Structures are given as C-alpha cells and as structure tokens.
Amino acid sequence: MYDKYINMESGFDMYMNSGYNNNRENKQSLIVRWHSSSGDQTTINLDLFEPFKIDTLCDVYLDNFTTHHTIKSTPTNSMDTSFFVLNINEFNIKTNIASNSLENNSPCFNNILIPADAISARSNAEITRTHKSKKMNYICSINPTILTKITGSITGLDGTTAMFAGDANDMFLAEFIFVARK
Image (cartoon, rainbow, N blue to C red):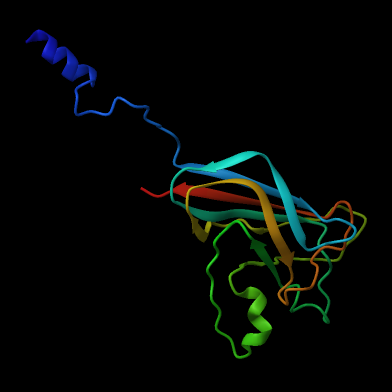
C-alpha cells in the first residue's frame, strides 16, 4: 500500500504520460536584417542563421521596423514613398483593401503596410528612422513549420518604387514576434 502512494506522488502512474514535456516560452523573436544590393533594391532573399522552428500555431506581430538611408520623399514621388509595402512569402498574410480605384491599390493586397515616418533628404550623415515602434501590430497566423529562408519584397505604395537607392549602407531591420496560441 505504501508503494502505491509513492508512485502517485512521482507521477509515474499508468494513466500519466511519462514523456518529455516542453516548458518553453510562448514567444519567439525573428529579426530580419536586409541590405539592398546595387542591382536590386526591392527583393528580399535571406538565409536564416539557423532554422527557425515553429512547433505550434502562432500569431505573428510586427514589433518594430527601422530603416537606414531611405530615399527622399519629393512632390513627384511623395504618395509612392509614403508607405513601405513589405511582402514576406513565408507568412500567410491576408489583408484586403477598399478603395475608389482598386487597380492602383493591388500592391497593398495581402502585404504589410508600414507608414514611412519622417523620410528626409539624404545627406552625408547617416540617417536612421524608426517607422513602426509604438505597439505590436498583428500580421498573420502561421502553422507549425521550420523556416530556413525569408523571401519577398519591399517597395513603395505603388508596388514598384524602390524605397532605397542601392547604397551599400541602405537597410531595414524588422522584428517579428511569434506568440503561441493557447
């Protein structure tokens, strides 16, 4: 009879799972650091340092978005450069759009829109701007998978305008937070 109480306290009864229990954090962070190339200022094609394992259904949030050396907003391109349009192929982004002219807004469909705060003239000084830093914005949900690459594009509002001039210092840094659903 004494042995029965010992087994119940130890958690090794027949009805209990004696397998490994993962007591992990319910959040993971993915930082995407992209540099433009001289030939292409819009394509994202990055290998991850190590595989990024998502082992449960997660909600993805954009925590912050910072750029370095963006192009100057002028009267001729101010509308196209007022937003960054970020497409990440590995994310199942489902955004819709309502507009008076839908054909001009198709680049916004199923993409992430980030307001371009305070894009100013380029100078000899290094210009770094944080465009999205106030709160985590919901992006999408993602099923369990293993990510080894991040691919996609970053453009202006029209879907073709390069937001960077192709300088070796041009870059953006985006931090995505993956929160496991309970």
